[in-house]
Image 1 (cartoon, rainbow, N blue to C red):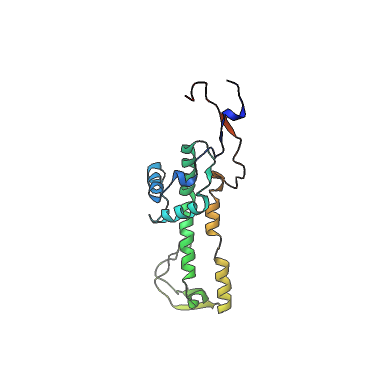
Image 2 (image 1 turned 135 degrees about the horizontal axis):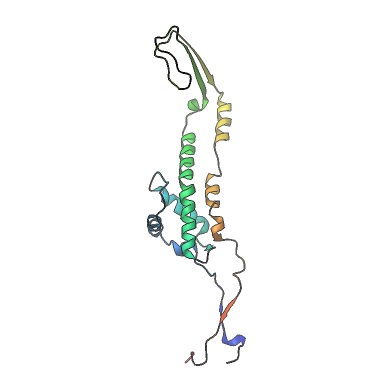
Length: 194
């Protein structure tokens, strides 16, 4: 049989599965996490669902970069293990900062100086041990103005926490793919069409 354009079929799709094809549901996602065998660095079990929703929102229709799905899974879950716990902790800290009252934000620091004259125990210089007797105490309390407290809070808050976490997975996916790749053709041998 002669080769010509009319006797061929054209493949015009990605060569690898998309994130949503590999993990079509949270149950499939959680099941794969449990079976991979890496240590769980997440403090709360339901935080895995947060990770799934965020990554699905960003990469659901993105094809994986690896031709091997097994290699993709190992690389993917290694990132979840490495950065998931940190992201969870950072979000908790951010939530605590956001829930602080104005009065709590204004508290800057408190320093206490104690003097113990002729203590019955010898003080140690290399520990945080405090002597049980106190003859004199001086305290210094620092308080921020409300405006300074808001400025301090703004410096502590990080509005890119989620963006940074999601970007850690970017190189695992084919993103912004305008051309699906080289066209793949196939042909059948004579007699296969019957």
